[in-house]
Image (cartoon, rainbow, N blue to C red; front, side):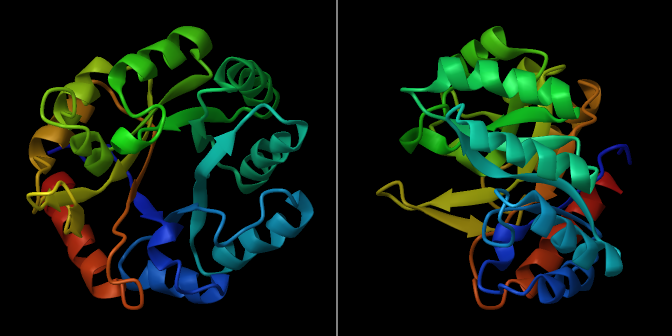
Length: 249
């Protein structure tokens, strides 16, 4: 398959470890050199301090490709998230919008996106958070494109159910508006509770999804995310990387 899709890892996978130098070492240990940083490992309200965080990763040979997932309400201080992303050389942030503030928040995000050259990928977070359904994503795009696009979290996409939660179909549906991917996989018990598994070993058809991304010309940000094994995530993440390489090359 195509080698076009480049990917890193979400720092939330390493949330048990608060020292960024240690996290950077673990990123390299699993065979990757890119990261999406979450709020566990950086304070995006402090752009000057954030530059040191970026340097810590750069010194280890790890580049910051995105920041997220951040909730945007359109408050003035959220401009700093875009400033931090730009200072890292990242072209994307992943975000959530809230049902009570999203129209204004999208307008503000468009302005900051243009100011800093950073696009906004709205993360789908399943059935329990606003924005998890494709009809809502469609409306976000209608209001905010081209600055606002979609981040498909494959596991949370599946979590909304088999009628609408089809990552392969989403990859086709949002071609041209797809700015981010979280490669993640779930299995479910009879109550609907989810469990993280190695990407491609659960309900995600990884080869078909990658094919759909390539056919749609995807060129955004992508990271692996595995949230189990909190105190020792490296072995499972290494297996995730192996699965990705087997599929993508």
